[in-house]
Image (cartoon, rainbow, N blue to C red):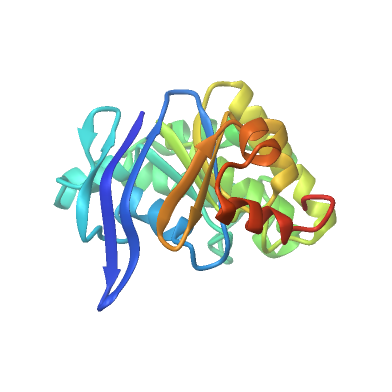
Length: 245
């Protein structure tokens, strides 16, 4: 579903991604871990061109993301759902209106179609009863679930999660991870950048370890956490808390 070939990204004279190669299969949950500054989020943002790659190519379901321009890029981005650390909800619009807006503006759905799809996705994340609420009336975990519903309402082929729980209080993290696990069980293709190592062990099909802008090691959760091959990965895991949190 996603094919990254020789991806490189520089900010001025600073190279933050070096020759990244990665394949993500249809229906797979790939978890990306690594120390801060290792290039994880930059790689994710290159996948939908929020960051422009310096060189290399990215394909989504066989289509070249890196070759898209103008309206073709806008159409491509609709196929890539993105959930950020911040929720990015419109504070002056209701939960329902937040989930409807992009459907009406970008997909040109009628308001009735958009509302039906929005309610379906809010129900999917357990928040249909909050449709008329304003974002300020929700907890952080609820706001993040609304952001997931908004992305899902556009019927993406893949979902990218960039530190989706890092801004949440610990007691709110579980509700977001539950939705993500449900999506995995339904066959959604997902790439997740996160420090939730226990979730990676439990839910990931494969784990990617990045350090210094390169992919150092890729394997199953058992291989990455139970039998790391590289010294860099062993050192990274040794710095984690004993619980792996």
